[in-house]
Image (cartoon, rainbow, N blue to C red; front, side):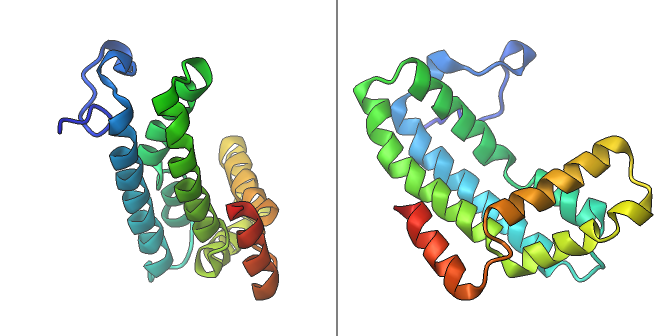
Length: 162
């Protein structure tokens, strides 16, 4: 099946080809986006180099590009059209994206790399934009439970999956 969510976008201004997208395109595209994100996160975590802004923060920021695109398109359709087929998908998509979010934000190896870069925030001389991205990235991990102990993380996963 030709999936416009997984194909090179040839629309003017890179606009979303809504007229080509069918409800059955979303789950395969979400699953592919999750798979790519997991591989990218694993690559960041297994990077043997010292954590730095490029190999950790920028790599994290771009690690979910396909998933973010597909999920954004889905959310727009869900909130604007919400026919029965799209509404039905939310019950399949949300658990998948929630699990990935937990797997990312509760990942000790990833968070330790982010913390190492964040520890240099005041001494490294980052640009205003880079500082903001670093702070937002670090704080999103903290807000999502990265500093919890293992038992608390387990409970957090249960609650968020519910």
